[in-house]
Image 1 (cartoon, rainbow, N blue to C red):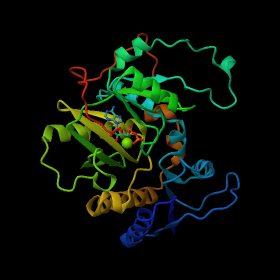
Image 2 (image 1 turned 120 degrees about the vertical axis):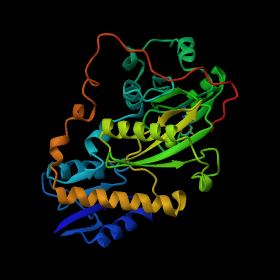
Image 3 (image 1 turned 30 degrees about the vertical axis):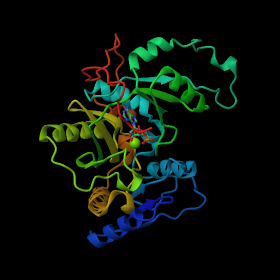
Length: 338
Ligand SMILES: Nc1ncnc2c1ncn2[C@@H]1O[C@H](COP(=O)(O)OP(=O)(O)O)[C@@H](O)[C@H]1O
Ligand SMILES: [Mg+2]
């Protein structure tokens, strides 16, 4: 019997529905359950053909368990090694090289010294930073947000240098990015599953939480939808994520990818609604079953450069110009969520 395990945190709707769906598929010799674990012995097989990981970003013990499970032959969705190495700033840079539109984005030194470090640890840093150059490159309004954040934590919309310095002061020892705000007329949140299937949902980040997934979206230009689908696949394949959400903010017809490192995406029935929920449960169930039946070797994929398109990870002699796709700087009164 091949077992698919689900490891999860506080969420209540998706994990149970996924287990039930997999069981209802009645695939030959495949079953599903919630993972149970205690002390983990090194190199001991986990007993699972596939584990769907919804929570290891919050629980380092689970992340370490999943790496050990991968070593012993378990396929983990998503790959715990790459997820550990990944960050949003790297992803913006990679995406810009792959031709996906990304607003100009700068990585900033920590405002406060990370615990255990002092001035002496920072001798490689310029001081003061050339803020004029940074602000000219990014423009205002802009978003100050963590390089590896999630769930809107520590995200600030800033309209001026003054706003920026106030927000930067709040950012403690986090590593932050400053990104030009997209003055969007539409916003899409997309599930990417198995690096093959994309489910595009119109989303309104300015609405109250429970109304953000637009229930009856207006028809959208098919060219735009195709580009969002193509960009979503490009990003999931380059990053090697089998489950992800990708967020695009559309300005002047260009979908800017602004958030696409969500390897344990929100899949709660109460926020995404019944149709989106049915889609994600079904597609993740199918993916997990396919992987369990295929018996793929998880170790064969564990070389990071293979996740990145050929050539992308190669050093280049000259730095390439950022490809922003922007026609003009966004206007001062750009909308966006603060
Ligand atoms: N460059 C941007 N332009 C416009 N809105 C943005 C931008 N960056 C972030 N936002 C807004 O802030 C929200 C949270 O930022 P996001 O990058 O999605 O981080 P998180 O991982 O916390 O969701 C987005 O849903 C969007 O509404
Ligand atoms: Mg987001």
